Amino acid sequence: MAVTGESSGQLALRDPDVRLMYRVRDDEAGAFAELVERYQHRLVAVMHHLVGNLTEAEDLAQEVFLRVYRARKKYLARSKFSTWLFTIANNLALNSLRARQRKPVVPLRTTDSGPLGPRPAEQLVRDPGSGPMQRIQREELAELIQQALAGLNERQRVAVVLNKFEDMNYVEIAEVMGLTTKGVKSLLSRARVNLRAALSSYIYMDGAPVPVPEGDEE
Amino acid sequence: MPSNLTEKDRADLVAFLDGELDADASEALEAKLARDPAARAEVDQLRRTWELLDFLPRPEPSGNFTHRTIERLGPERTAPQPKRRPFALPRWAFGVGWAASVALAVAGGYVGLTLLLGSGTPRNEPTEKDLVRDLRVIENKRLYDLVEDIEFLKDLDHPDLFGEEPHGS
Image (cartoon, rainbow over all chains, first blue to last red; front, side, top):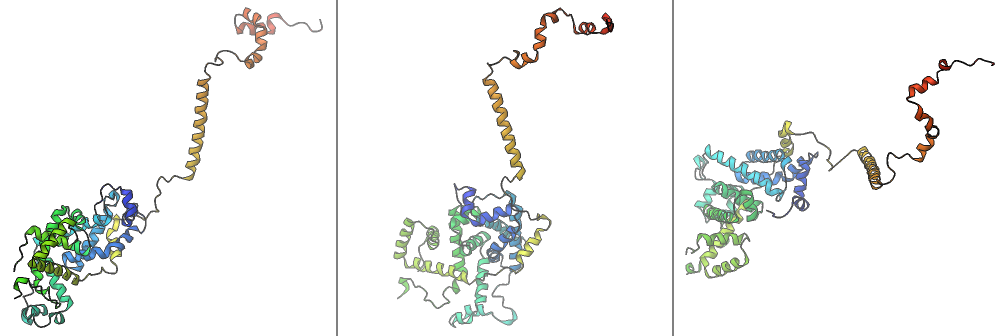
């Protein structure tokens, strides 16, 4: 979270990760390894949600840590350490996603079933009354959701991932992405509407009744 | 029935779900939702869509991730150094510092005292000790005044000038 009017020393007192980063800055033995240990799970998970590939996610996460290390001597806490870390991660991920767009890889659409017939998820769509939650596997649903996420533009995707998986509020996301909080609000709103459109077939798969507007009940 | 939500309403709705709407705006939105069943259905869909994201796996990094990351640093990595203490000085430096401080204080005191007592004994006026040392010169000052220079005085002391007195006369 952006913390205005708070000195670097006060932040260090409040944020243990800032203190750890100061130890990295001072080349204290083992401090960098401790930092990597502490953040690797979150960073790899976020990168995986953004790029959809574990190997690439690990490469990007490593690059984030390398940049942190290279910038250590200039480090001065101005906000929470995680905000700074995810700002670097955001820049790297956006560069990677844009580079990928320049060299597009044609994704296999779920409707491109090939000679083996429809996949279970497609079967679910074609046969909605056959107890979909019993038929569809969790991994397949995850794949569909990952595709819906990949269908968002890069900035919407980053905002969604930071909000959903890093539990960042709008102010923190704005700082990481270099936007206003109003811009983040708009970005997240459009992202969630797009996700709803992409996943509308799967929203009520758990058997919960679909809410019917009162005017349509009769 | 499609909801009559504008884009701004929808943004407020998402912010409401995220707990980012202030109290007044939340109250106004809740009143609107109470009147508009289509809007309520939309809120429900947005909320459920968001919950679907929980199905995404959260992959763990490989077991040797930290090791590989540190290896990638390669030559950039500096040798581990002991924790640096702020303003760490060798122990002897403190002793030297104290000695220098004391010497400075003494010197300063002496200069100050000299200046303070500057109106005391004039530098050219002989002290009592000087007078004792030079007593014999002072007693014979009248004679010394007759002497033109020190070489003449030495010549007077030379035995050849007046001849030696015969022994036993």
